[in-house]
Length: 465
Ligand code: NAD
Image 1 (cartoon, rainbow, N blue to C red):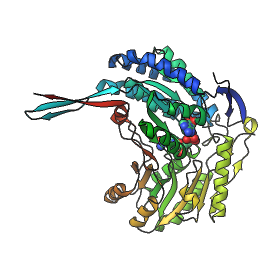
Image 2: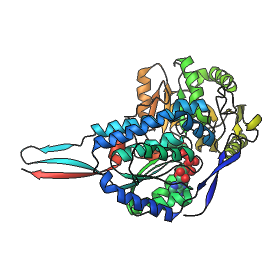
Image 3: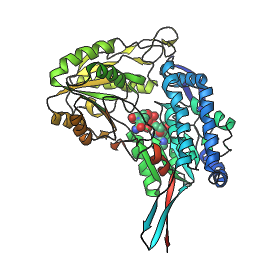
Image 4: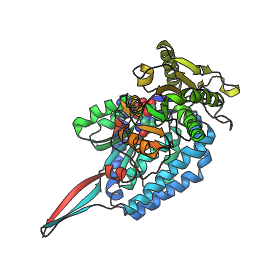
């Protein structure tokens, strides 16, 4: 309806290969209208029926893995092998997980001895919104949509305007799986236009958002005075804490992954590596050597460990951040530059994996989220100092701790200000666990029962005997 369109660019080639609508408030109104019509039937559809449809969506995602993975890679720039191994399988896992979850979801009852009994009804909220970012497009989009639908809501969902294609393909899959019209409404457009129209709409009662802290702040400022339910999954600046007594080989291998997977564009990547002083030089030499071996290039090439940065805007931002690190006195140990792609990728947006040392905790480089293939190294002498460095940012999303001393791991885990702590591992996910950040990394938790509770309204019913 808006008549405005946005170019869709393949970041590995720099080519515009499609256009998507920049939907306006009238489009949102139309989506809400059909969602309202669908809600009475969907919200009273038996859980077993919802399970069947959502499980069928999961099966169809698996059946279309190759097409979805290629679309994800063309939109985002991530290696095709990664889309096939992680992004698309996780999207079907999300639907399968919440399809079965709703079959087991139960509510509480509180007994008041001989006086009364209370039971809690958890009812669908109505029309809810799911807004997601570009770094794990279908993976995070479905992580929100699946529990919202499983709980019986009708959904208005907006993927990132930077990576819209797999969301579009999902809409075709949902139809084929038998999801009734109006239950899921996928609407494309920019954050300022479409996103804000969604957040402002009075009939949308809950918003599940994943994205930057800046956008989260803006969304909260609009939604809070209207008393909308909010779940915010925001930015991070995660510490990767390495003690001398860790399993060295495992730590080294996983630290390279936690630094540079998906071009460092995962909110959970460890971007501040904190190393015990006694092994600092050893770590630096080994880590830099491994980082230099990472092949950056065409995401369609199986040997590329790192693909393209998602967009020109984000590419420019990362290059600016590296310049800032230099100006702040940081020493670039490896990387630090853009890379010119080969063949079809000569106009793509590629950046070398970059390791920086010599910067203290308070500088911009160690305070602001870069969200790219850039990490810093800092050393610490004691557990207390490691803790101070780990907690020295506005963020509190995830942390990794590497040590063979389980008591030290537990002590640290209790005091590091992060919603997610991995001990001797990274990105090991059990979908039942609470997922989310503290401080400026967000409000609320996703995953398991937390998500189904978020997408339902609790009502207590007290019956006196
Ligand atoms: P972004 O905030 O720019 O955009 C995220 C989504 O919100 C997009 O769909 C965008 O169109 C929309 N949006 C932007 N402004 C809006 C507004 N004012 N109103 C409504 N919608 C709006 O983030 P991005 O650049 O797409 O993603 C990168 C960010 O996401 C990073 O900060 C990263 O840490 C964060 N992230 C967090 C998690 C997590 O689980 N905590 C996971 C992935 C990414």
